[in-house]
Figure 1 (cartoon, rainbow, N blue to C red):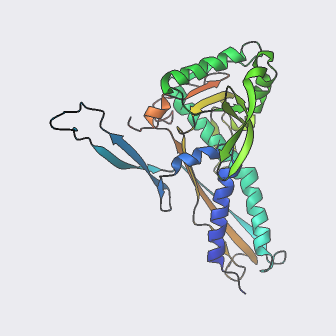
Figure 2: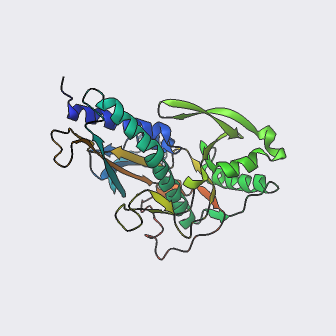
Figure 3: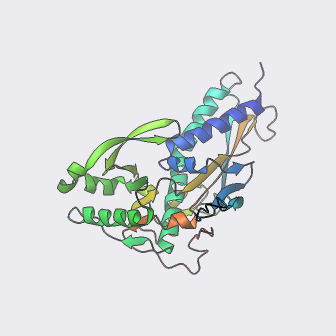
Length: 322
């Protein structure tokens, strides 16, 4: 039976999106986009609900009427990334195309896309929180890391109350924490749900610590366009003035992350006019937002301060209303 490339593309899109949620260290943020509307392309609609506050009950007239407002804000997905690949017809026939293409795209997403999306999300959270005055500079040391971390956790609780928090921390900082003698009694192992997968993570005072490769936790990155001289390999690199992020402390429901594999295309060698090869075209839209009322509850810490932005837009301001 001839391969139905349209149906195969749909299956690939669904599988790749699920792999992103489960494979990215930041995949848990996509659960907060559950009510986001996406119809393809580079735009999403995010729901915002507001209600009236309490009023006095009147024994003669009963309840005062309240109001509920549900509005959708249209947001543009800032990152629009893509690649295409050729699988030579002599190496891949129709019977084993799916197996080979699955292996190629899974590896591409695991080694290239997931690290890049993670890096973008953490650097944007840092930029937003730091611009809002919720960042601090600190060089991790065994003698001071406990007090520094506790201070930021307390600052979040002071604003958010007993919120469901997440700590995101690079392995190199988590290792210092692990080897601090005073912390042993506060550390435990707990379950952390991400997509359809439950993973075991270490917790501090019941707060899960999501550990991330340090290369994905810099304060700023350059995302190569794949065309400029010296950037033809694409990918991403830390910005020249980037610092190491020590940790991000946030309510679990604060970051709203969206990543969508859009318009995934497969062309057979008979259709592809440029080469006797299967042509795979991959396009990924993604972005992250934090509403202003949630941004107050986020704390970030880095080893040094980035250069001051020229304007709020340069800092990646959320632009959301409270």
